[in-house]
Length: 402
Image 1 (spheres, rainbow, N blue to C red):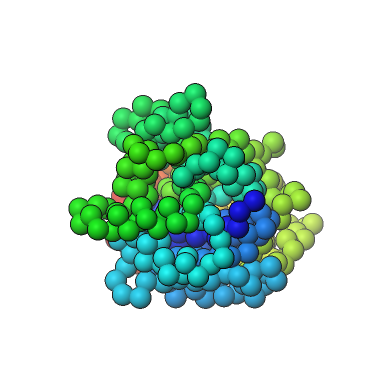
Image 2: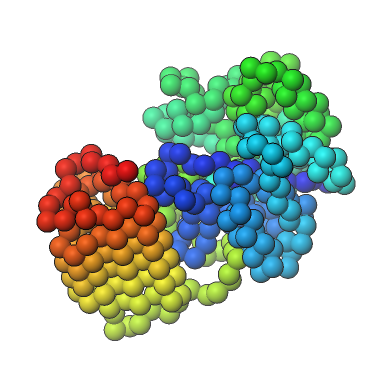
């Protein structure tokens, strides 16, 4: 098999993630308590015997670089990991990010380039896709999955002929004609990719993006094939997708599990905490350093979370160092790092109070919720904004504090 270098795109801001990515790049979102989303793409590379890995960072690049430095130190097989940030202005798009790092690519002893996203949750042996790419003699290969048709508008959709060749690629169509979507995983022959990126860079009107410009143009003149992936894969592109991917781990028969011979490497490889048998924890993932004195049901807690006496956390994702005060209830919420919920509060108004409700309440980084506060569903409170405006009242459905 040809030698491969991986380029992981991890520079986007994650605008659809609301306040969760206001101060944090999407690839650094916690997942399953003790992992980060980018750990999955990085771990897949290590398991696939790909040692030359470049992570292209931009938004909150200092935080990304620091995490990746710790990740490389914690994992002995990651000595080939490089962090590439733009030297001048931000990257104009995903294709521009790779184009501006062609000098790095040219220095690599590799024939093929594997382009990945840093915000997807899945386990995949890339060697199978690389072997397929070589077998069909493709100029480029796109990883594809099938999704429910109502979700197809979130992705690039493809039309594939009987030979597996892609004949059409449309990025985020408002009226998708197919439920076969791109995973944002691409294999290119290195010299071929450099040529197409240079052509795109010369087009001033181009968005310089793989989905919007490179691939739609290539399918009209080059050999672009589809590689179907049949395992679990989730693009963490929205709050709902992020929440559901976490909750999937708690199902009786999850489609995706962390218990396997394909471990996920992170910056800290500490084992999960052993829950205190005297506390009340039901069907939940509890990370090291948590102090649970209340009740936790069907939830995921990151390291250092505090749940005080008579407090209840239900159907929620709670990030590191958050605190839930005495006799408070967190119901179908995502709480960012450092959130401090006072005593006798209620946040979420989830399905327990509103049958069939699918809304998610989000509290951003370091938010303080004063005592005796009720926060309604669909409320998104921004980072560093105290929730005193809500005191002694219920936030109307759909309210947003900025």
